[in-house]
View (cartoon, rainbow, N blue to C red):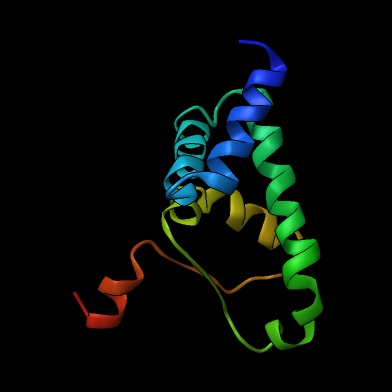
Length: 107
């Protein structure tokens, strides 16, 4: 498959598909299943670093007194990697919730 065909398929699914979330979830599932591969380890680590840098860093002061919660299956299955990166960055209280509905209803 040519690169342009792959790109066109991605754009079509993400912007014009009926439900882009499950489409993207397939990529995450593949990455999680093969996370012991060196290339995917780097991709995952880079993504986690970007979350800490661009999403969480503005809330650094609040996170010093409050725990961080990662919610969803992707974070749940990558929690060892996330936890490791969190500790390296000085975040010590990190929690993971795989299925938020079960957490909310107490199952």
